[in-house]
Image 1 (spheres, rainbow, N blue to C red):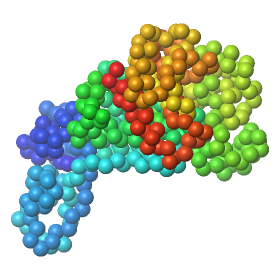
Image 2: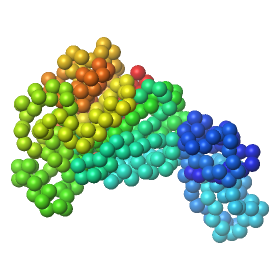
Image 3: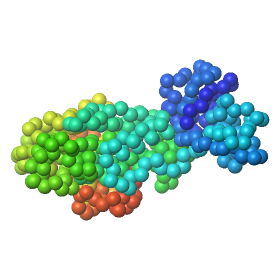
Image 4: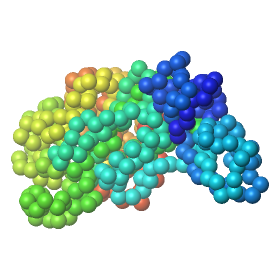
Length: 396
C-alpha cells in the first residue's frame, strides 16, 4: 500500500499508526533516507492493501474508521484528495486493510507461472522482500531467488530440483507467506516470534530450481514439435511425464555437482532421460550453474534442499560435514518426526557439494511419503511436518 508524505510525517509515526515494525518500513523503502523525508514523497506500507468503499447516507470518515478498526489518519493518508466534511453519497474512497490471509494458494497443481504470479503479489504487498533471478532455465525461464530478513547470518532453502517433486515449491511459498503474515501482524508461529529471526537471519529461497521440468510434469510437453518428440523418446516413448525428475534436457540436476560426480555417473544412465542422467560433465546445465554461482557468492551458513519423498533427512557426505550438523539434524528430526540418515550412499548432489566445498552443514529433506509426484491432498500434512524444519533452520 502506498501513501504520500505530509508535513510532519515520519516512518516512526507510520510504524505506530499502522502497527508495523519500524525495521519492516525501513526495509520496504530502502531508497529513502528516513531523516530527509519530503512532502509528497511516496512511501510503501507493507502488509496492507486498500479496498474501495462507497459512501452511503450518514457516513463520516470517523464512523468508517471506527467500523474498520482503523485510526482516522490511516484513511486520510490513502485519500489525500478527500475533504472529510464534504463527503457525497455514492463517492468512492479507499480504505486500508491489513493483510491477515494468505495470498498463496499452494493446494493446486503449482506450475512456474503460478509461482511467478505469487512472487509478484507477495513483493507488492510486502516490499521488504527482495528478489532477482539467479539465472535462466534451458527454455529461458528466469529462476527467482527471494531474500527475506535483515540479519548477518545467511541461510538457504530450495525446492523442485526434481520436476516431479514440485510440491516442494508451494510448500516453500506457503511458508514464506506465513512468515510474512507473522512479521507484519506481529504474531507467532508455533509460539515463536518472527521479528528476532528476521533481524538475525537473511533467508535465501529458490522455490523452483527446475521450472521447465515442473511445467513438463504438470502441463505436458511444450508445443515445439521437435522438442516434444525428443522428450517422448527420452521418456521411453510415453506421453505420461509424471515420473520425470530431470530438466528439459533430460539431465538430473541433483546429479550435476562436482562432488565425486564421476562415481555417480559411472553407475547411472549415460544418455538423457527422465531421471538419474548426470550429464556429460558436472555443471553443464544452466539451472545447476545458476545454483552453484548463487552459492559461491552468498556465504551461506547452511543449506536445506527440499525433495520428496521418504520422511527422512540426509545430513552427511563422506564424513566431511562439521560436528554441528548432527546437532542440527537431531533438532530437525525432533520438530518433524523425520528420520535422520547420515549418508544416502550417493554423490554429485547439491548438498554433497556444499558440504564438500564449504565444510558447513547441508541437508536434503525428503518431505512426505508415497509415490512422486505426491498427491496435493497430502499438502497440509506435509506442510505441518515441514514447518518445524523451516523454523528450526531460522533459529538454530
